Amino acid sequence: MRVAVISAEAVPYSKTGGLGDVAGALPKALKAVGVDSVLITPCYWQTKGEYLWDTAVEDLNVDWRGGIYPAKAFYSEANGSPTFLIDAPSLFHRDSIYGYNEDHERFAFFNHAALVLLKRIGAAPDIVHLNDWHCGFAAVEIAELRRWDDYSRNTRTVFSIHNMAYQGGFSASELWKLGFGSEFARNAFSFNGYASAMKAGLEASDVLSTVSRRYGYEIQTPEFGHGLDWLTRMRADRLVGITNGVDYEVWNPATDPELPANFSIDDLSGKRECKRAMLERFMLPQDLERPVIANITRLTGQKGIDLMMQVAGEVLAAGAFIVSLGSGEKRYEDFWQRLHDLAPNQVGVYRGYSEPLAHLIEAGADMFMMPSKFEPCGLNQMYSLRYGTVPIVRATGGLDDTVQNWDAATGTGNGFKFGQYRADRFLEKIYEALFAYADKETWLKIQRNGMAVDNSWENAARKYVELYEWTRS
Ligand code: ADP
Ligand code: GLC
Image (cartoon, rainbow, N blue to C red; front, side):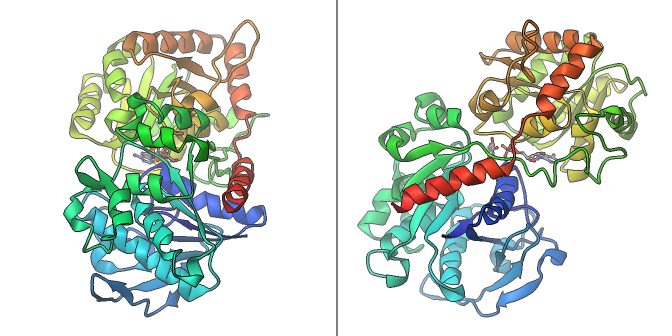
């Protein structure tokens, strides 16, 4: 089976969040279970030159808006599987990956160029696996092409929803110039008087998936559907949830090169050294007995920063350290800065993005808080489990599916989980975690329960293969 995975970001070429992790790792995992897969992603200004191994196509020459747009494609296997990177500098060599008024044009072009490239490089894929709104354009294009283009006739599409909150909206009057003037295309994009690339993907793809089982149900409700729940309900018989995997080649405390000391489920002693290094890195006192509660995230409303703001005072009063790595909305960046200024000996803050620091924090912290309002899957709670850092999460989406609440009576569970999106519920769980931390044996048990969990990509890749087979049948 030939599969082409198309994504706006993919590790190690580019990343702003979990989509990058997933799109980078899935093709490699597919290859490992015997699928012939290629990844297609843009070449950004942020993509390191060392990853551009070769020029695969010098003259991609994409027919675009009535002319020919010169583009190139690089080849790489830096993510462990064959990858083509579409290079169109005026669209992708910019200060940031997203956030421009013409993002819909940039990704419409990327989608079209990806399909032009596929034709150039060989036989048609059986499955084109599309990810999030950035790839809604290709879903429509393939559905249309299939009617008359022999090359595309047998290609089927799988569209993965990583986050319903981002829908790629733009003015419907732009559809014509992007090549989506047909009635079919206009209907697919049309949403509340404008055009939505997410809606187009949901409507025009053969099969839909999302990144956890629970989120698959949640997006069928008004609370989580962001206006599109009617469509996911309508297509519920074509929608499945597959929980993301973890790339244990990148996130493994036993081999992680970013850590001052490695450790594993059998010997956690190196974790103490990581904690020491992390406290030092944040210029916090070397008080190794004091618990550290950490958070690493994009600072947006989704991630429950409002709850963190409400409980921070009490957490500090309880004597814990708090460490935050993140960037995003100014009000949240300001909050962390103010908290740090208020208690510089208890709060460590790094505003920005840092992969090495993310590894050090996962290893050095005792607890990881993730009280998200909604969370399609979430990766950091799974990284935390493997690093013996106990997650404190809200029971939503993938957080609910991947974290089991600790039960002292039975000795089962690997984290702390609360239901309602309320600060008092969150704080209760933090107190419970701090109480458990005070008893070394209990804590070690919770850590080990988490470290033993297998969230490897192999399981997820097999589920995707089943899904692809079902899509083709
Ligand atoms: P989302 O995709 O919604 O941001 P996920 O939990 O799926 O959430 O994935 C987030 C990914 O981005 C993780 O790999 C996390 O470590 C990483 N990340 C987020 N913010 C930062 C940051 N400031 N520095 C380093 N890594 C970050
Ligand atoms: C999204 C979601 C996150 C998920 C990631 C990868 O960005 O917010 O929960 O883990 O995609 O699927």
